[in-house]
Length: 248
Image (tube, helix red, strand yellow):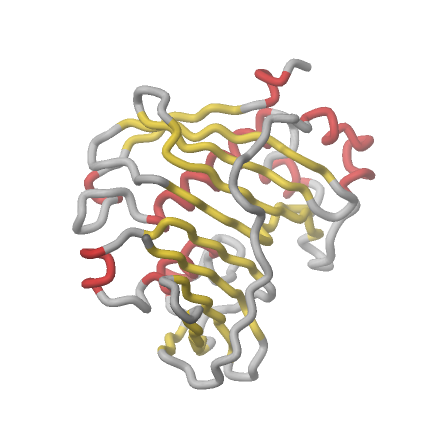
């Protein structure tokens, strides 16, 4: 299979109800589009969630890093390219490129996924699924941004708290992965987004949370930078996810 056939390209539009007060696509909506592109790409190759659900498996997003020079503007069409970089026994690396209507690259994203059993919630051996033919879709195309980093937050004083509500819960009954992105960015004042933009956003997921649970947000700012590390914890202290936000 040629490298071109291993890359999926999917078209989107920055709808007016998907942009923020600057007229640019929000990070949360872009995250949804990346996940949609991943879903389309895997479905076309026999590894889509609907097919996996028939066998009591599903894909789970583990890590995501997005780095952009600019966001699509209101009404502008844009495209997302996606491809599989590596496949390991329990994880797979999937990359993305975001392009404007003229084909100019606006930015890239890296992600890490696991396939889990919907019965046991434990990871599946990717090499044992479909005779291991997922490796046939590995593409050698490079992705020029750094892989997701290891995020640590030392602060023990929460700066915000939320209770998981209806709009936070996804089809699996868990807190939606993209809603975490939106809640993390809601920690910053509007003035921050008037003066600067998010150049890089990272998120790593550690545990699932559910309707009615209270989530606490902790934040560290890296000294002398406009980089922030955020950790979301349950009341028990269990870390649910960690995020890094870098403004420029």
